[in-house]
Image (cartoon, rainbow, N blue to C red):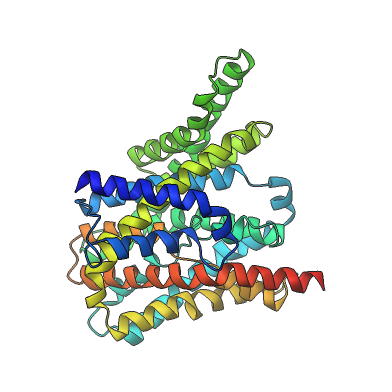
Length: 396
């Protein structure tokens, strides 16, 4: 089965590579194709692919994928443009994100009678971060105004790292671990601070090393393709080992790299994005084949309603309110509110929660799976049409 699975993954990558340009012009995206492939050929489908993988193994794959994507997105950021439009991502992170968690808690209290408030808060925190990889169709499309693209990219790059200490604090309370407000604040500062320090320090050292190596022509052409990927993984793992947020480290490291090597970043980023795309393909195929199938029978009406609310009102209303007073139009605010897809970060958080052995961990995990599945479908089929409509409106 292992060779058959590898062969099917290689076939998927080959076929998708051949038609990727055409697919990007259709109302579907890569994540939707990969997930559908996993469903069709996985356990509840034809059974041609199988993944003998534990939850922790899947978490590692998802984390590394997200780290590479975050580093690449940050490295491609135009900081001169971002500096002129810093108000929008600040509002999204400092106002929109807390409001999203609070509104998610309110929706959960109304729907889940069997969950405690802390468990509902865990769900709301798991589903608050947006996914840079799943939102790539929007943040990389030049038809979307650059300030909006940069703001959504920065938001998705930082909100998962910000949510990590919040989630761990809720898990500590749910697990009846003793702690006070001071320890929670220390945890938050450590996650963000250590992550940022690791990202900056490692990238600064690596950037100077690469500058010397490039000047002396020491770098082999084929090995250039691995620089960004390896640097992203080193930033991520170093921060995790040091007790910080690997996601913050990856994003901050990417931003530092963009500032240090602007003349080389396009050349190096192209291959890194290809690696990120391949890792995303593997992750979403596993999600479709090994995760969604067994979970479908456990979807209740409460889970489905919460998932739909999480993707609409719970996300869009806080974003809309946080952006009042900016130069963005009503349509722009609605666009940014809708394109907050849930994906890899939520999957990683769900594995953390599942391993915490909470009384209702299954319900919490099933809610995440349902929300991410709906996000893959709904955001996948609406991205290109909405971007096209926005472009047409701008032309007028």
